[in-house]
Structure formats: C-alpha cells, structure tokens
Length: 156
Image 1 (tube, rainbow, N blue to C red):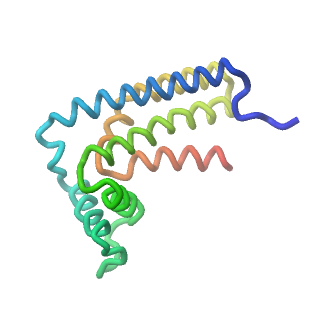
Image 2 (image 1 turned 90 degrees about the vertical axis):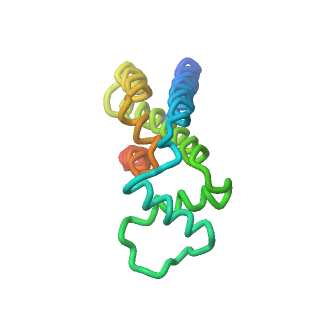
C-alpha cells in the first residue's frame, strides 16, 4: 500500500492553516521591520550578498574573480533582483514564503520520524520560532539551509 503525503482532510486543513498562520506572522514581522531605518542599509555579509546580487542582475553572471563565498544565495538574490528590480522587500517576502514552506516540511519530517501529534507540535513551534523568522528576514543564506536541509532528510 502506497503512503499518501496527506493522510486525510483534517490534516490538509491543518497544513493549510499552519502555512497561512506562519506566513501571516512572518509578513507582520516583515512589515514591522520595513519601517526600521536599517532595513535598506545591509551591512557585512548581507551587504556583500547584495552587491554581488546586483552585479549578477546587471548581467555579470560569471564575475571576474574566484568565488570568495558560496555563490548559491547571491545567484538566488540576483535572480530576484533581475525579475523584480533592486529592492529589499520582495527578496525578504520570498524568503519568508520559503520559510513558511519549511514549517510544512518540518511537519512531514516529524510525522515520519514520530507521529502526527509530535508533527503538529513541531509545526506550531517552528512557525513561531523567532530565530527562524529573524534569519528569513536577513539577506543571508541561513533560511535556505533549513529548507534544503529538511528537504534532503525527507528525501533520504
């Protein structure tokens, strides 16, 4: 018998609800942070990613030096800049959207490893976990590490 991803309608409603809750919470955080004067002034690693992504968005896909840092995130950010223009709101909105999908992936991982009750608790706690929300709002790679890390464990 094949295992279905979603076992019943109650679970599907919960997943939809926790995704919406997670995303709305992150959207509120993003809107609050957008009024912060430092929102449009990235520093250190975020500034490095921002400048590199702007260069990529302007067509400099290869660059002229050896990669100093891992290139995946600047290429992701550069693609977002190319599609939507250089601003700081849209990339963060997309990052929060991916972070909300991470909550769903964590639910599936916890359900597979434990049971549905633990998975529900894991999803709720992950959706409100401040550290995840914070790093999803930074121009850094960290939110992708969570998403792809959990996805990799699920697929293995």
